[in-house]
Amino acid sequence: MVSKRMLGLGTARSVIRELFEYGNQRAAVIGRENVYDFSLGNPSVPAPDAVNETAIRILKEQPDLIHAYTSAQGAPDARQRFADSLNRRFGGDYTADQFYLTVGAAASLCCVFNGLTCPEDEFIVFAPYFPEYKVFIEGAGAKMVLIPPEIEHFQIDFDAFQKALNPHTKGVVVNSPNNPSGVVYSQETLERLSEILRQKEAEYGHPIYLISDEPYREIVFSGVKAPWIPHLYDDTIVCYSFSKSLSLPGERLGYVLVPGKVADSKEVYAAVAGAGRSLGYVNAPSLFQQVVSLCCDMTSDLSVYEHNCKLLVPALREMGFHVAEPGGAFYLFPRSLEPDDKAFSERAKQFDLLLVPGSGFGAPGHFRLAYCVQTEMIERALPKFKELADSYR
Image (cartoon, rainbow, N blue to C red; front, side, top):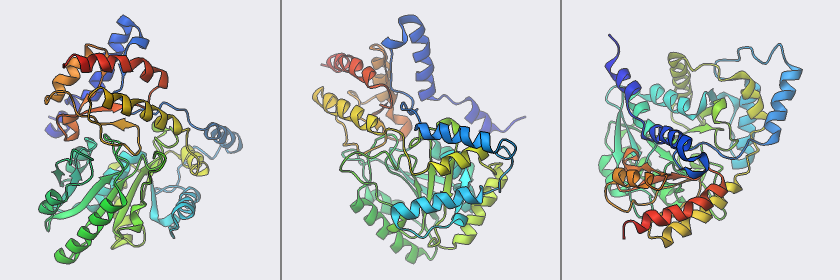
């Protein structure tokens, strides 16, 4: 016998992965250059040269030390560098002891959900959302409460949000810049969200934690700013990954930040650490704790994503697609040209366009387009999008 729940997770279809594998099969038939794969959010620009140079230098200077265990929560010097970086950039007073280093943002989120969850707890998530949130939250023994999308701009439907809040609400998850929409929550949206949460904390007599999932924090376009949420709401816990900003998804390095202003911050931090211990997430990769912390003020050439976005958005709109204005990340989430987004995705395959249906992100009638691809591929794909659009006329 095995766990039925884990068996279900292990055998569940992943539409994104299925599209990716279909693309590989199709490429073997018609050539890779003739398949327009917008399925995976895998960074297309390389890490800065300094990342590889730093790794090589450390390997040469510390060959007998660098592969050793660190403290369970991460090496103190690496955690201090992350604190210093955020203090320089955002004007905080963060310390090394507020950082718990993790195996990417997924581990950060799992540690937070498992560390916070008590019986009957609920976490509110706004659609469109990263589908793994449901897995992480339910895996921690909590209930995910999904707020339907505000489909014009993908900000927050505050009427639905306030109706969902109740004494069992332990936390609220925000992801800005957003996967899958690319939308950045405005200062006004986040201030209103913070004010509502403060009112509900006072009404319910317990903290409501705002869990800010920020792997795309640095990928914002000219004229757009991603507000630093801990400045707006004291009970904010930050989950971060360097997978996107430094193009290091395979190195699995991220952190949980529990600022000192968070209610019961020391207990929350200890619970996050306890969850890491329980889940087996102690000691993030030691080499990249050092490499990333020494390079944490750098980014890859993120201008490529903005250029790709500026190619796609006006072209798609001219073809008749409704596209909410993106402010960052490397995704678009247009409306599909028929209500059934899965049928739309299947139809797109006739033109060798691999587009992910929006239903899995909690927003039927849309599709996700990951434009972290070579610009040249986008240029070649635009006529295919036009053929797809024309097929509906």
